[in-house]
Length: 127
Figure: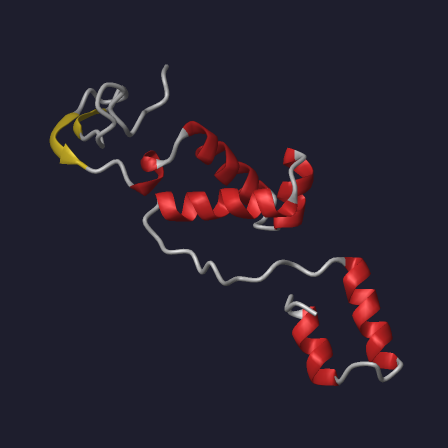
């Protein structure tokens, strides 16, 4: 069997299903059926979604599994979100590394920065 594709290989427009068939009882349905949003995704995007789900949505685990940087994994996730027809909040900030977290907590402990500044930095704000 071949996988169902969602885009026409000739013109790239969305394909429409017009016939469904049950091998078990020999029933056939004809009409116009939507494939759903996931058939809008490329094979690479579908593979990413499978890995994302298997990793329970944890981008750090996706990063490890794919051997990619965190920003690259996030970019691929944003591409999938857009391909599904949703908007991406581009102002979302980068994750804080363990080293940065330790430095912020040390600066807070010595009084170099305020609690508010520490919270901002730990949320991923520059600083």
